[in-house]
Length: 196
Image (tube, rainbow, N blue to C red; front, side):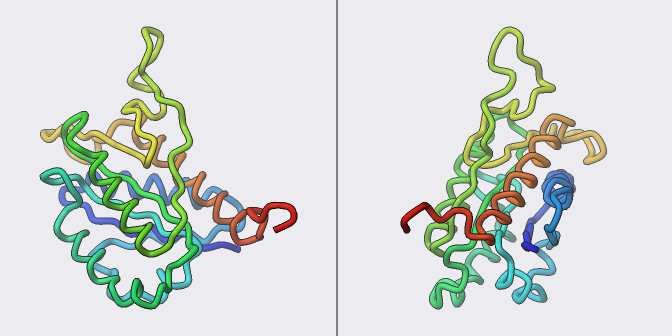
């Protein structure tokens, strides 16, 4: 059994939809215990995060970076960083914004650098870009062509029931499955190369 913790902030509900999709994907993988942690509850979940094999970070992109609420969580991990408690855990990330670009890459890079400071191992999306040829469609997985993590776009005037669109939700589910499968391999030691 491996544990995947998904910690997220959602200002208007759109990133929560994305987080739930990551959780759904991870939960589909056999022998995975997936836990969804809203940012408001992280102070009561330190033990869960410390015990997780993988931590998936998710926040909306506000003003070219993660929301202030999520950044406060990142900063609150300083004692864990000092003790390297999360070293060699897997990490991944997802983000959402109203704009198609919205500088979402910067948020994912922020998460990636955070994970690197903790000595974690980053798991990318692992998908080719969707919707990038004349035969492509907005319904394709990875329609926003992200690689570092799952990106979603939600029209600012649409409620979470409608946005992000189904393809972005499916892309987030894919990330959940990928992280969960990687966590099982990592936990079982199958990442160790021959002769190591």
